[in-house]
Amino acid sequence: MSNTTLPEPNRRRSLALVIAAFVVGLVIMGGLALLLTNIQQRKAETAEYPLRVVDIDPDELDPAVWGQNFPRQYDAFLRTQDDTFSTPYGGSLVYSKLERYPAMIRIWAGYAFSKDHNEERGHYYTTIDQKNTQRVQLVSQPGACANCHAAEAPQLIAEMGWETFNSTPYNDLKDSLHVGSSCADCHDPETMDLRLTRPALVNALEAEGIDWTQASRQEMRTYVCAQCHVEYYFQGENKLLTFPWSQGKNIDDIANYYDDADFADWTHAETNAPMIKIQHPEYEMWTTGLHAQSGVSCADCHMPYVREGAIKISDHHLRSPLATINESCQTCHQQDEELLETRILTIQDRTAELLRLSEEAILDAIDAIVAAQDAGATDAQLEEARYLHRQASLRWDFVSSENSTGFHSPQEAARALALSIDYARQAQLSAMQITNGLATTAVND
Image (cartoon, rainbow, N blue to C red; front, side, top):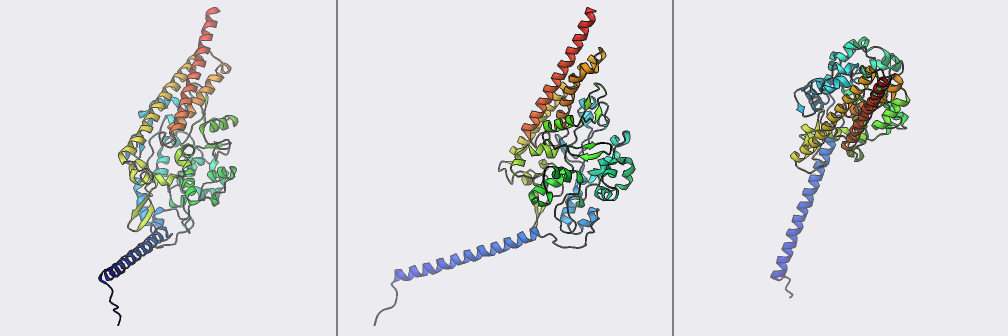
């Protein structure tokens, strides 16, 4: 009879294989369990309505109502009421920029910004602060100003018509304006999809051949911000809110657009030059930077994803990424937080230095033009100097009024300010040559 008992070494080998197979099986099962758990978490993260408490009316503007369905986002948005956060060049703490940078008073001489220009507070205050600024109290402003400062704007546009809404004086509309930034500005109340609600951006994109309804979600995470964080002007007698993009979005393209349109916001009170007031061109500046070229949206940095339990949401406490370096920056940049902050502030410090040099050059140009006028220079003689003054000022303003202090596109900001200094010095030289020529003529006579 044959002996079927395995030799001792073979029995040990078989036992080892069985144990190994069992362990591998456990690992596979554990991996599958983790995968299924992860899938469920991702489903929870992407659910449009984790819990629908109320139906949101298509005309609902009150964020508190939306907040019943989205309490995490609403709680974060309420934190935009915080007006104590400060960075070296921004934040939500109110201060007078005219006091901190007194050159602005003369650079904007004759314009309302020379009377009142403060650091902005958070999105919660967009209507409150606009109603209180001296810029609408001292000067009659068109209703077009309310486009970005009141959630009621789209409804008023639908009722009044685009042209009538823009041309109606702001002070005639302000009693109808009660809600600042609202969920409705950016979200469809039924689907929560990102949407555009402001005609000026829709018109500008259409002129570029862009159908925003076909944009990706990542593109929309910038487009919704570009409804307001842009350069604009009031076109024609009806004061139609318009983005000057038809020739391009950098400052040279925008300057050429305004030259071709023969447009000026005001006449400078000292030099009599036809001037442009640049607003807040964050979107235009961002388009020239590395983050834009890398597909990074505004929301990636200013509304970074945060996790609350099993839910991942976009942080609706919109503010400077300096407050959220870990979430805003370190998801892509693996350097230490201190190193990243140092890099940000280095860019801003150097941009601020160039801003101050630009201001000095522009003030010297203003002084030279005023001296030429006092010496009897004619408008024809001063045409070139005034034009150069205009070009210097709007390039300085493009960086000064853009809220990143150069960070959105460091090289473009530096280029714009270098040109500002150059144009200002050319304006100064042109005016001085006129003054010297007049003095020589007087002596010879």
